[in-house]
Length: 168
Image (cartoon, rainbow, N blue to C red; front, side, top):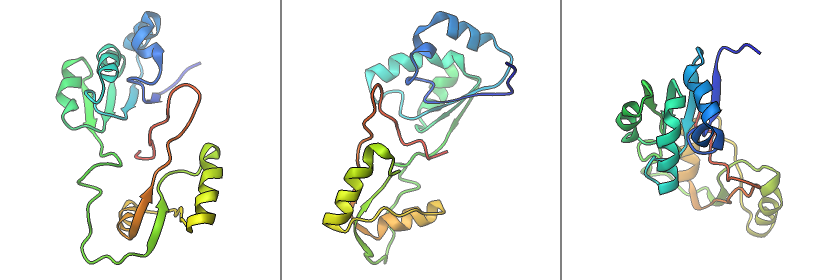
């Protein structure tokens, strides 16, 4: 079926076809449409990630990465269009704000999907924890700064763990 774009979240290391299946790699390298992926962690965060990025980078015509230092390396590996996009842990985005008063004692940061819902409800009941929705990034940063204790809950999925992909 015709397509104008192939877009894959985590195409560098989350889907084995891109780093281990030669037929898929051949298709991706030779297809004539843009192929965009988002690398959700630094190439050198783990040996496994580095190994997979080394094998899959050639599949993509465009890569967005959360690590500025990966940009020239990924270009050298064969992807001509690599750009840095700040992730949720970027110190240029998330920073201490001066003179912000504490508004929330406990706050969960993340999406309350079904795998987290029971724990979120329990923490709301027992701690009065909040799980706020922010319309803008600046509001989100402000909400974090107004919180005394931030709570994160890992996503538990069969297979691989999901990274925070809301950055796009």
